[in-house]
Length: 373
Ligand SMILES: NC(=O)c1ccc[n+]([C@@H]2O[C@H](COP(=O)([O-])OP(=O)(O)OC[C@H]3O[C@@H](n4cnc5c(N)ncnc54)[C@H](O)[C@@H]3O)[C@@H](O)[C@H]2O)c1
Image (tube, rainbow, N blue to C red; front, side, top):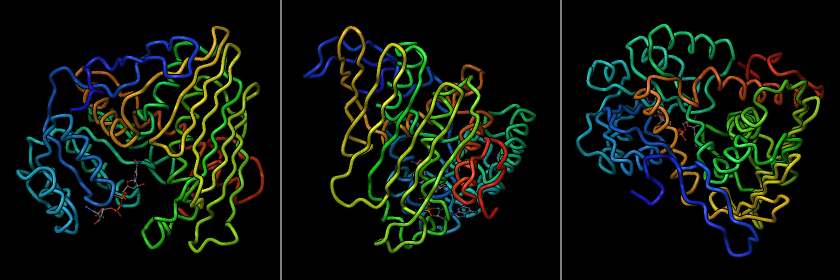
């Protein structure tokens, strides 16, 4: 286990090289339950499952069942990570194993709803991959079902535990910026790896499947404030081969705040990922050549502080999503990333896609489906 895990979720943030002020200590590390270590069943052994399993092994958790319609995929993951796991090709068979208390669903949303429903009805706690659902009413129904069955349903918005995002949201929550007025997310990265995969079939790949992490963060940063409207556009570059637009711009508007997003997923050289959050008392800035290489600065009247953060999105993020679910079960409370709360970010993404398609501003909640569903 890496230095990131210390049980409390609190990490030491030390001032970096060019900082003029000490960085405050803030909770940003993935949480771990005190003693609860249930057996986990993973359904969907495709590309992303590698990072789920890597995280669980690092956390000392036990995955005792693996399921994929293609058994060779499940067998490969078993050989790589959990040699003792039982293999299934149907999630309903996996649910017959009464010792599996938590089910991790790493499926695409189309196949996932059925598996979520079956798992909840079998009284299992569920971690669903993102984007949670293709329509808001289905999402609300599943959240209700989880409540009715008295189990937890959480969504794997692992970006929340990416060290830079976790530290910045923690700083905002601690009131270090005062009231937030603007958030700017600017991303130039290479998303062309999705060519020829099922992701290429997603019409608004950037505004939905990818962008959902940024809409989720937006909903968290604007919690308690009314979003009036979302305006967005999406277009293809002149030189891209793949179908979905790789360029997208979004403006999320409250009466006294804006969140702006600028995405270019077709940048092969000179990539950069930048987040700037401005409030009445200070500014948070995180910049780096990729999502897993970020440098955070907090600027305020005392000067500039640079916390030195451990971990990366793909290590801390997947540990955080499972760790927080297990903590919520152990502590008998709702998880921070519960399904009902996830609908706020999803509503922003749906509004952005509807705006990009119609050329008009859309209020969150007015667009209830992902386009085409
Ligand atoms: N940062 C992140 O959290 C992150 C990153 C990548 C992907 N994802 C999300 O994870 C989900 C899966 O992505 P992926 O890249 O692993 O996709 P993938 O296509 O590589 O894998 C999907 C797997 O599900 C299996 N499958 C399909 N239907 C099934 C069923 N009914 N029962 C059991 N197995 C079934 C397929 O055989 C395949 O192995 C998507 O929703 C994606 O958006 C999240």
